[in-house]
Length: 339
Image (cartoon, rainbow, N blue to C red; front, top):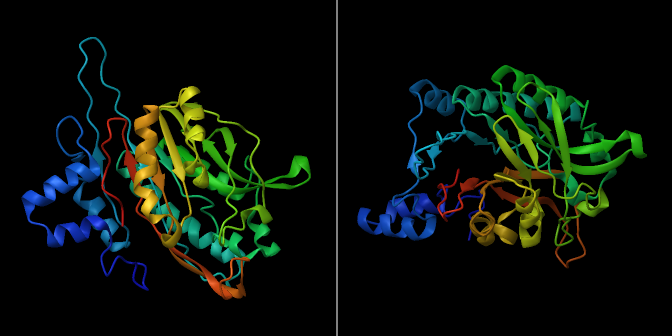
């Protein structure tokens, strides 16, 4: 069971526990079963420039890089694409002015996207509802103030700036306000091209109605189907959060030609952690594409206690977001998790 601080008995990951207690030979075998092998060996870890690693340490974020190999062909050159996944925690308490909360997150994400750009990342995906606390558990209307236009809102403008700076495609999951259709609220991922253009958007297909996942108070199931976006670096789909529990949802993106599917999420330990390491990997195997699972980090507290009709006492937090983002390949291999 997770510790009160959100760690696994003081460890940042299952992998860290295994490293401490298993001898090298046994550890290698356990990792082979847990993470699979890519071309007959563990997924290769890439060395990053010292300056990047030092910056990550100084700025207090976990920076890892891995390489999936593929069989060499005689007539086609290999297509190498660097994909980045970004998990983060909020920077301000939920009682701070909303503008300060959002600006704090922007500055944190600027640091992380700059690190990704310096590492050569060409497609980056942020976590679900990244510019705000994941406040849908509260059922309070005030959080709708974070909703914005997918095409012209401040988060899109921010990501356009970063996309142009680094020539990077950015997947930006936000709370959308569709002002052309009655200011309807959606849970939406905006795809921003490497030139800063808005390629398109996808709205969350499946909405949870379990425990504190009170999202249907704010938005309903999306109406965009299973779009695949053709970017300069590959064909991508976005299966937002709860959609990962639905195999046919994953298949829809495969049938439409996805090469990489991102799963930007916000999920907590007690409910989903045992499933987290399985679902993206299974989807990659079943649908023959790469999957990147992204979860947020930390525990977010709210001023007013809330209940969710599940018999639990009133409380002021949703639970601990356990991070553990990773990438899975069609050959059943996967990277270790971020912290």
